[in-house]
Image 1 (cartoon, rainbow, N blue to C red):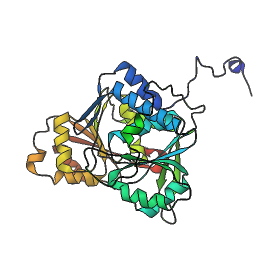
Image 2 (cartoon, helix red, strand yellow; image 1 turned 45 degrees about the horizontal axis):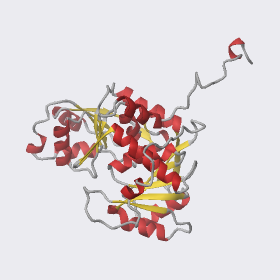
Image 3 (cartoon, rainbow, N blue to C red; image 1 turned 90 degrees about the vertical axis):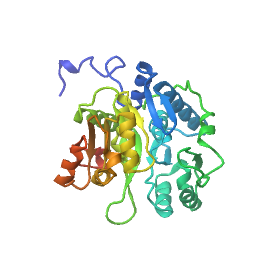
Image 4 (cartoon, rainbow, N blue to C red; image 1 turned 60 degrees about the vertical axis):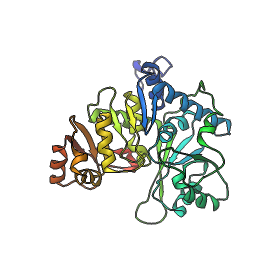
Length: 337
């Protein structure tokens, strides 16, 4: 049944835009180009530089024949390249598949084949796993090697280096929104209880909405400083790569959970937000007294999984870390309530 309000009020460019989180980085780089975007060891990049790198990666992938609906798999810890992939891959309509770095070659091989990965971007720490996984595939993907200075030598994954690959791309690349906000933006896998891992597809609209929902839950103001204690391979980091970018915040990267390092980074960079399982909070409590000393500002922590014991919540809040307990599923973009 139609009404007078249906006449002449169809969606148009002036009143409708596709909702996608890749829009966040263009706005942030435009409004806050010189604000800090990435901190990783000695690396410091602002939002203009990060946006340029994302466009280079998107352009380079397109130049290698990657298009809408193609899967780009990544096996990376929480390093700058992982943040960049969350924007560059969907900029060309491709689908980001973040692989669980704790899985073996058989599981990774299944996911690469099931997801029909055309590209694999992998850190050298997982070089042997990726080599073994790719060796069993009928259709070999393009493999790109990420040499993180915070790791060291590792196993070289391929002859194509990530930084060299970026030089194939154009920093002024004109990316485009998906034609439909229900287009896939990422592919995640959940193991379930039996059989092979199950694929879960996120779309642009869902990622956009959940990313903004994250900031609403925390009443997050502009320019948060977010410490990556939660793996970005897990539900796309609960959509926080997009959330922090939307708020023109700073991504403080961390390759692996190390309680002494976490507490040091909180102090050094005045971290305001972080996420992780209760085991991460417990690890902080078991850190040395010297490491726990000197946090003089409030840190908001979102935790999920098993309910943290009341004594853990009480003790961690005495450190100045305020806990928000959430629940979610891979199937619902991470935290939902």
